[in-house]
Image (cartoon, rainbow, N blue to C red; front, side, top):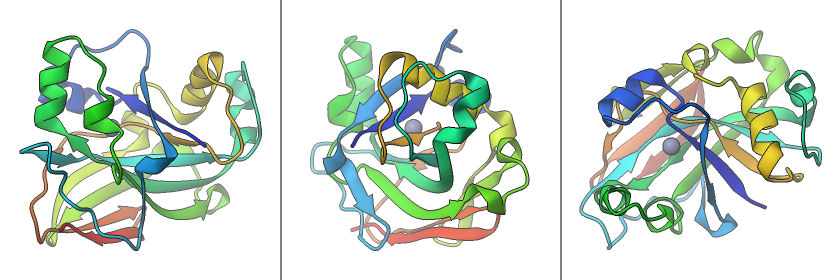
Length: 203
Ligand code: ZN
């Protein structure tokens, strides 16, 4: 399986990293070895001085598809969840400055925290889901899927133009503003519409 991640999908986050607003979705892929299950701890990688959290809504693909039309995209997933796209930010900034690929900073082991899955039927509107990340009891990121530049169904359709979507593939749909560093001992808890999706320690 693969994890397709979307970059720069929330205007306020684009501004905080001083990036340009893209004309099309920015995509990158994490391999299956990047998955961190929700019961595991996140270990700070040795190759960066600054590891950042990015809380993101995720969808799990449960039907194979290519060139999916946006109005059929909702048939390709039935579960939705919340995860973290951990990022070695200082390394990513170096790579970006050199115009090099981001994989070392984005796709390393343990960089994709996959939280709890919820049936999408539990939510009345997928395009108005609130979510947040608390660090040590304080809310550090808060978002709503209504703020996305490209909505979930548009992302599925867009991704499927380049990559065949297979059963079990995940899509991380981008992070809202408020990304920041983690330190040893931090406790991160994520909520999707007030349902706890994960709770993990940084080691
Ligand atoms: Zn991200």
